Amino acid sequence: MERTDYQRILREIRREIEPFAREGRAADYIPALAEVDPDQFGICIRTIDGRIYGLERADARFSIQSITKVFSLAMCLWLEGDALWRRVGREPSGTAFNSLIQLEVERGVPRNPFINAGAIVLADVLLRHLDDPEGRFLSFVRALSGNDALDYDDRVARSEREKGYLNAAIANLLKYHGNLHGDIERVLRLYFLQCSVAMSCRDLACAFGAFADHRTPFRFDGVSLTASQVKRINAIMQTCGFYDEAGEFSFLVGLPGKSGVGGGIVAVYPQKYSVAVWSPRLNTKGNSVMGMKALELLTTRTEESIF
Ligand code: GLU
Image 1 (tube, rainbow, N blue to C red):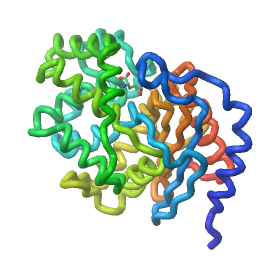
Image 2 (cartoon, rainbow, N blue to C red; image 1 turned 30 degrees about the vertical axis):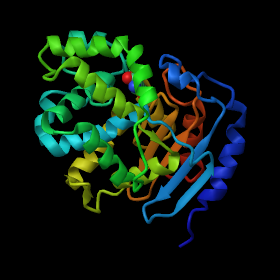
Image 3 (cartoon, rainbow, N blue to C red; image 1 turned 60 degrees about the horizontal axis):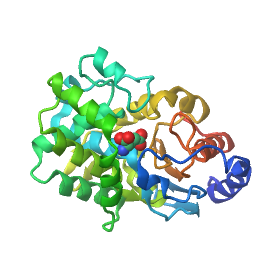
Image 4 (spheres, helix red, strand yellow; image 1 turned 135 degrees about the horizontal axis):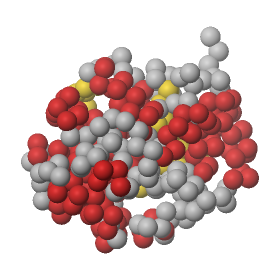
């Protein structure tokens, strides 16, 4: 059977998305992110059998931001199983990633683990169960990606904390409603550090290989999940991975995925490949302009999507 020529397809896609290279703006509400050169692009595909196809800045590390929420969810499902769903929902929010309104109306139960409120609850869960949550989280992400050199970026985390008024408001609202057990400052410190992890497209494509392959037992650094849990993480990526643009991503790309305000997007094609793309300029919903375009073209060209 002929293998898909992903390298050629990536080169074609790159040429085709060039007209969008100056569209959108890099996130600047986290001051350290505003210092990143916005005109960069990288992409990397990892097939389920381990072949890698990369282009341009595929090995440049960037701030993964909200993509980290998928790693947190995996750890929290391992720690709590279905009990986790008593504290956080699994419905799309249809609102911005940092919205407070829904959280107030729904009395402190975040709609899903991939909006900030949900991920702050996940950080609280990690703190409750683990002696060294920062160390344990990092070693899990290192094991998933197969890269021991990965690290937090303290400067980004500090920069976010200094201006993190909305996330602090979210944490206070959660506390008020009894859905945050730990100390607010402590939970936020962990949350901001998790968002600050610096990874490349190659690291992310490798890490998400584990989510693309639910048939191989998920066991990394002592964290284990059932095949059903892995599939359900993909289901939540499909419905909730792109803030209030989850429907659009599903429509245009047709894969489960997760984006971050650092300009990264990961997506998985179950049993086929995982892909990560990075370009810092974001659309008004907070998703990478070039990243969305590239993935739309990838599934169009290959005629491969889960639908
Ligand atoms: N650290 C970011 C925040 O809390 C993550 C947001 C994102 O990537 O969507 O605002």
